[in-house]
Image (cartoon, rainbow, N blue to C red):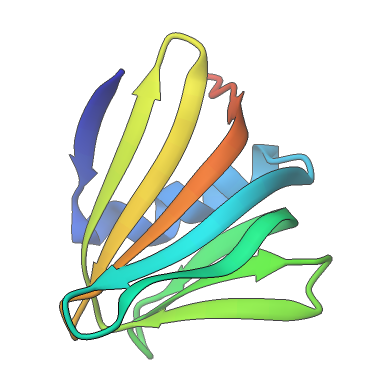
Length: 113
């Protein structure tokens, strides 16, 4: 697998595109940091979309058909882990230094844009 950093100016387009091709799939959301340890926010829950709002500087992960939103405020960096099979995980570092890790149970195939 290879990781790549998504440039901040591309976040809105990247997550809009991802959500437009994304079926509902199972994901695990973990938040890790020296001050909070490792916390699982959702364990293999249905994830239906992601978006980035540059005005409010917040990245939102929509789970359980929109009933729950996991918000990452003031994201600093987005790193995706993907290979020929597709997208495996997304790591988002927030302004508090916490790492929000979204792991996909099955890789999401990524067609060309």
